[in-house]
Amino acid sequence: MFMNWRELLTSLKRSHSLLGGTNPKMLEAYRNLAAAQGSNGALEPKMRELIALAVAVTTRCDGCISSHAAAAVQAGATEAEVSDALGTAMALNAGAAYVYSLRALEAFNEMKAA
Image (cartoon, rainbow, N blue to C red):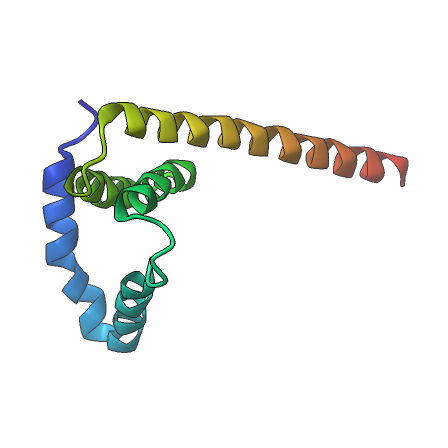
């Protein structure tokens, strides 16, 4: 097991006041951003959580993974749906590495030509 995800989520929930105590406006803005998510109702909560979980993987955020995995369970996502969303994240991340590899090679060749 990589980590205790429930413990991480509990720890994150307990720790949020640390930043809120020194930067309450920032914490309030973050809460407002989270509350606004999905406010137009175009996506069902389960779909939003599957997307969020895939994005959490591509951004490598363990706290986001724990939070959105719990929310995906709450929204009724199945393991097959989660697996499909994660497969999309994997494909996209590999695609991003490919595109940025082309950019890096272009930068290298431009520098070499100078």
